[in-house]
Image (tube, rainbow, N blue to C red; front, top):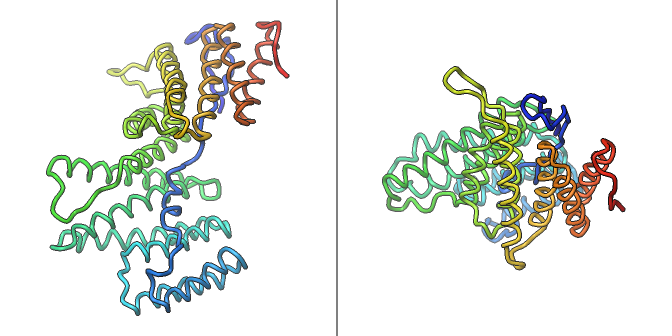
Length: 367
């Protein structure tokens, strides 16, 4: 991603186009919908349903034949209805989500995946509106409404994908998801959890939905909207989770790229202050990664740390601090090399070469 800082705002930038790595690109949370409902156990289904599902999965994952796969998925749903299975059970949701996953992942037809999820989501919303408030349905309402939120997050990803690029629909789905989950969370905090309601979405899921909307806002260059969403997501994730490092990096980048719409009553944000805040979050990402126990670490910790180092090099360059920029590029390059993060190593080397090219550095330890 390229950004241009005019020299009147940051004189030391000299109209330099600074390229910032955004860590953990993509909507990680959106795939939760598929991953959590992959059909693995057939014991929960009547044999007639399970038999159709086995065939559907065979034609989905092994001998890929879309027509046969779709035929057997439909037959499985018909058999489930005839067997009296609850159409809003996790098992039936799993079948429908598997169909959507098949369309998206296996035959690369995201439009068909959207059609499946939109149809399921609307059915759920209709039920929630008509029967969710009835006696004895509180627990079911919680589960169905939660599924609507998850489907909306996934739909946001699909609509914003390169094959569809319907960004308004993506935003509508993501805003609905975040608004709904926060509204339900606030109601429970205000009124307490009602009898038989059950647990609402956990902090990780809520944070994931916020992150998804933040990513969409960033992609649309609406960083002033992304930053508060990322900040709220950070507050929900344990600091022993390596994904916190990614969120802090993304917040640092979002702060730097902000261009808040100004009004007569609300002047634009000071870019120097934004740069300072961005640096603080990048440093915090490194500190957080360093404090995570080895048993809890994964590649997000190491790659996120490397990204933060690279970004700190870019931040230092913007301020004209060449020595600090070189130090961070070097540290990012070494860290990237150690953890096998090729993109990070390449970007840090590009940063170092940029310093040399401009005559601002006369030696390099590039390999």
